[in-house]
Length: 333
Image (tube, rainbow, N blue to C red; front, top):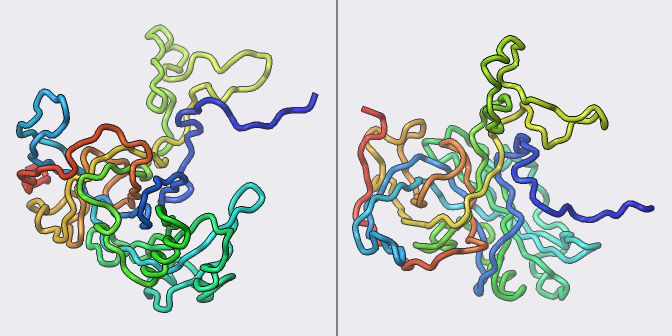
């Protein structure tokens, strides 16, 4: 009987726990809106603080009262849009039809890639006449050189789709921002719910007790010298160890996504939120910044990608009412 090939049914949770291929998170699904615009943005994690705000959660025990909320600070300088790329359906997937590159590119871009010709395939003007276009995306990069807390000059490149509206609207919007620097307030608004992706902190090779949370063996098993091993690797037949058996291996440095993180504030001057002595391990925020409710994956200085929430939850008051942002020292003094 022939083997039937089909997609896997069911969740593998976080298995297999491998190291991420790239520190720039990969996003495969994007929310669709009514108006053509960039679907995502990227920034760098600076640290955490807390804000005082009026609780606007419906039916909360503290609704209307002043509460303290932890927030993560991201430094988000404008992103450079360097190319526009169009896709069409092909053989069950997508293939690029053409792309157009900006005339002036930053000098640091040559550190990351070999800059191709200005146009490959159909040009931006020719794409308007095509009828089979399915997706319009831009190629953008970050500007870590202007961030004092991130000691790197090589920009991170990523492909971001243009969502919302018709294909013609998306092409017009993409052509308008080609070669420009796009700030975050033209992509997201105050109070939006975001999905945030980043690569977590790496912890190297760890045993099954810490990696999977299995129980340690009893005190009487100490004579075997195997207190922190799994009790059984499986049967003799078949002579194969299933991937379901908890074993040692890589822990951390894996891409994770936090869903429905509320955008609490967007600012232009980091001096408004810098604590005394700066953020530990990062320093001072000197560019545009955002405050996102709660914690985010990854250590400080790591790139973080944001998108509009693909499955937003409760409806809140659009703009949160912040009363105070803590600027107390985070140095543990």
